[in-house]
Length: 192
Image 1 (cartoon, rainbow, N blue to C red):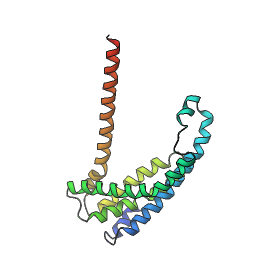
Image 2 (cartoon, one colour; image 1 turned 120 degrees about the horizontal axis):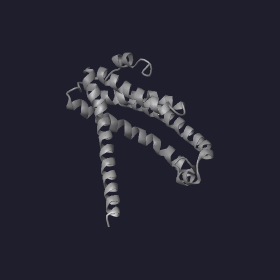
Image 3 (cartoon, one colour; image 1 turned 45 degrees about the vertical axis):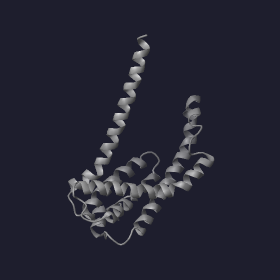
Image 4 (cartoon, rainbow, N blue to C red; image 1 turned 180 degrees about the vertical axis):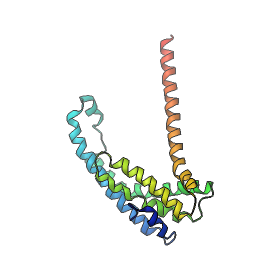
């Protein structure tokens, strides 16, 4: 129900009752999505090798989706999913607190984040599944925070989109510094 009618789901969702059930839900769906993602990356990596130049093949020689690296990645994936759920919930809750939109506790935010793992079932689709999952997960988090904390859509949107703007801003700033350093080094090479 959370996947197709998140508004109805979050209106009925209790905001307390423990973290175990939502954590297991998020972990199971996150693992299913990760396994589909790994499957497609392994499958398509082999198929794409026919179209790669020797230089590109050399660059992908140490891919994490080969042999023992894949096994290690599969072992650590559950821990990474759990860590991600807590980090994202903590970040969103802090941003909600900044705009006085967190009327319920951290548990309500965590439940929303854990249940927002549902769209990662879209990773069964090989090319667009990740994008669809990411977008729909943001929509579910937005709706979920609004209902779980009984706050406005604007405050929920602030909590959801501020981390994206911060990340994009950091990427742009790092790229600008890198490009500036690159241009300065080219400039010093041109002027002996």
